[in-house]
Image 1 (tube, rainbow, N blue to C red):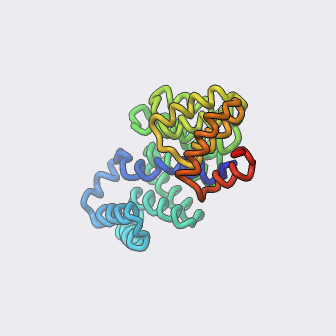
Image 2 (cartoon, one colour):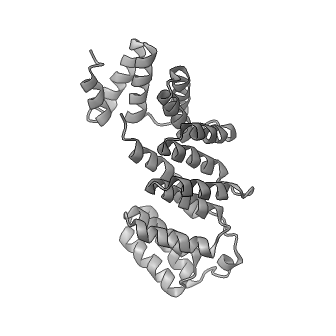
Length: 256
């Protein structure tokens, strides 16, 4: 089986960084920092983080906070940087400070929820996502619903996961993560026909991965369609011959 925790955590955080850079500046506090040294260095730090240059990103973000320790964006960005560096306590400290300074920022709430979910604090994560969704003008509400669904799946609450993922897909039927999440969820509860349908929808809009091919193999195995199962297996062997999923397939003996 796929390493569920790591894969789902990655899915949750796939929207985090775009939300970081795109969250609206709602507070008058933010506006007064326009073109200040704190803002300039915070944005440079964000840019370096996007490029994967974490050393320079840290230098710029620390400088931004030296210029103004009360700049919420700098706390938000450095929280994400600490998360990437696996410094959970420091990430949490700066997320909380950013929320203290800008409690009405839905993008910040969404990102903090993603961090909490990754850490396994599922109830607190759900609270943050729901706070983000409460803002009717937040353009990331669909992403927040998707995060809620994926986080609930990780928590093992499949009923709640289905509710949130369905809400996300109702708003956008082409959401890749939600489609895959629903395919995996339905496989887990034994609704293999629906799992197949969601996986097929995912394949129309998403990237074919070792995980998706392995899920297809397992669905078709349960459905009893050996030809389709073998077709998935050939693709898995061709595209990902060194993958954990191909090893699982051959070790199970389904290739015979």
